[in-house]
Image 1 (cartoon, rainbow, N blue to C red):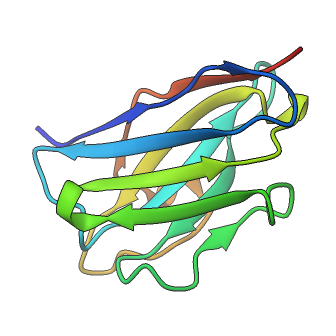
Image 2: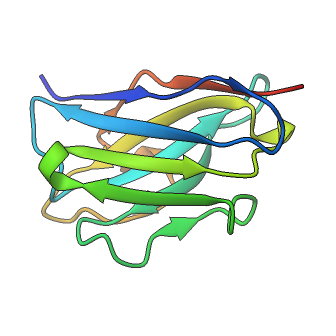
Image 3: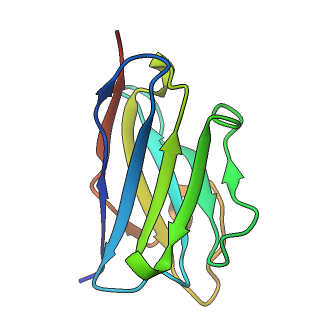
Length: 126
């Protein structure tokens, strides 16, 4: 069974940092494009960041540019989202999603992605 499992969510104060992890189970993600989405209560799911299979030229939403960084470690079958300078408006449930090969590509359209995790909660509050 193909699964993505997120971890690393927590309660953090404004200005703090977290690193989210997205680990694949049942498949190797080295040829997948992997994206992070987030959804806050009452809001639509939005794309945060995406990394292609090669790892080059990742995508970021304007709201997180300069603060978030996506990376992948194919040896560990894991993609990371480093989140710095967190703001209350970053509060949401964060999901990772995979677009399978051979035509895997980065987008912020949720329907593009074939495999989803269950999410991890990030709360930014003092």
